Image (tube, rainbow, N blue to C red; front, side):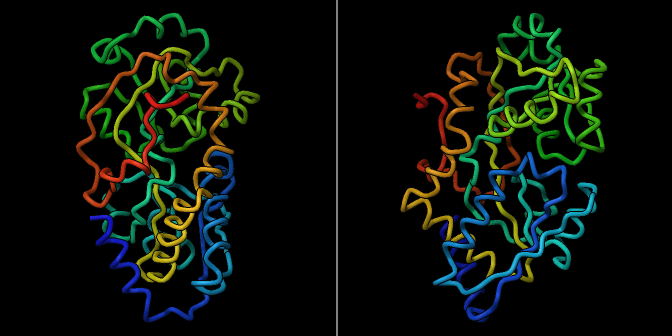
Length: 289
C-alpha cells in the first residue's frame, strides 16, 4: 500500500516538476517545543531535495490558532499546507495527502505520562489494564488518542486547549497526561518551570500502534512527493537515524523504557496506508540498548 501511495505522489507531481514549492507549516508558539524535531526534519528534507526537486520558500503560519481551525486551514491549503499530525484523523486522511512515513518511528504510540508528582506511589501500584482503567487520562479534545483510550475502556477527560491540560492535571481532574516518549522530556523542561509539582511518571509505559506523519494539502502534490522522496533518501543514507538519535537517543535512555510496566492497548483506527510492514521504519522498545 505504501508503495502505491508514493508512486501516486510521484505521478501527480510530474506535471509541476519545475515549480517553486511554497511550504506553509503551522509554527504557532505552542508547537515550537512539541514539534522541534519534526520542524528540523522538515527543514532537512527540503534542503536535501533542492537539487532534484527544485527551490522552495517557507511561509510559516505563526498566529495562535485552535486545533479545529488549524485543520480547517490545512484542508483549504491557503494559509497552512503542511501539517504534522498523528495518523488516523479522518478529516486529514481524506482531505489532505498523507506522506506514508512514520517520522517518529512509531514512538507517538509509546506513552509515558506527565503526572502530579504527589501521585507517583498510587500510579506505581498499576500493573495491568484493569488497574489502568481505575485511573483517568487527560487529552486534547481533537486528539486521535481519545478514541483509542475509549475503545480500550480507559476513562478520558478532554480539554479544548493544550495549556489547560497542565492545570487540569495538577487540579486533580485526571491522573495521567500520557505523552509520546519523544515529547515528554521536552515538555517537562518547558512547562515544569511554570507548573510546580509536574513530574514524569517513573513506572508505566502505555503502548499502542500509532505514528506521526506529514500531511500536505491536496493542492500541492509536488510538495507531498518531494517530502516522501526526501524521507526515503534520508532513511537510506542514515541521515534520518542520525537526526532522530540526536533528538531522542538520550531521552529514550533516561526514560528507562525497558524497565517499565508495559500496558498494550488495541488501536483499530490506523489507516491502511500506514506502512506497518516496513519494520525498519519502526522502533521496538525491546531492542533498545
